[in-house]
Image (cartoon, rainbow, N blue to C red; front, side):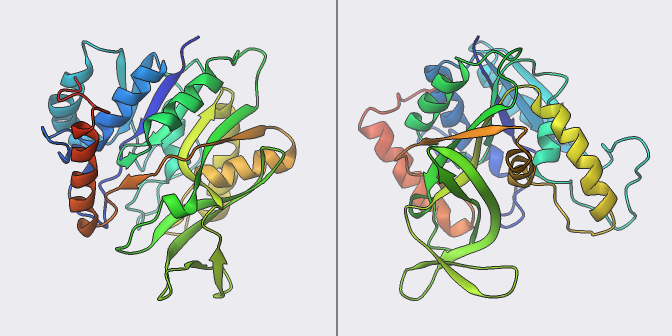
Length: 302
């Protein structure tokens, strides 16, 4: 069974400004997402599902989907702030969507096979897609429930020189995820060491080899039911907290600790890059130009 690639493309990129997902950074105007989808198809994915917002559907269909339609089946689902379970109402002061795991929940109607989740604006590297496609292709949704995976990037390979980043910091044992904690302000200090500030305000250091989640997860479809359950719990506690978000690592962490799921951490030496800040863009453009020049990618992806 070929796995599905589920692309989280609903964010507008508040730190960067503009619609990052439609920004041409390749030599012929390719988006970062084009490279991910090209690599995913080479690795054996059989369908692409995008989660977007209604307000940029027309631009997305015109500039993005038109490129892929002759190469792979594609579907669109939508994330909106009012997509809530029965009995819950959006607070008047809530303006932003409910986070990455809420975005995943929007895919339930379109996905019935093992699937990988990626951010639209992150470059993951070809090896990462090969690793996760190989894993998901061997899963049977009927018998492998709760058998999940993630590609563990080394935090030192995921940093930007231009500000802080958010990462799911992972602990592993015998190749399996034990713990994942979302850290929202990881950055280099004046000595180029990697640090973050914890919930108590203490500055903590991270070894560059520490595995982190870049939201390259692999799930079987039973994950949707778990997500619905956990989202209800989340809303009961946090619905009136304006900036609260329902993160993928938080849900996975609960399932692992409850013994309801296992997560194999798939190692890759791939270097992540993306446009988190405007200052990141020139470096991304240069790196992609090099990958075309050395033959890693053809002139025309689609």
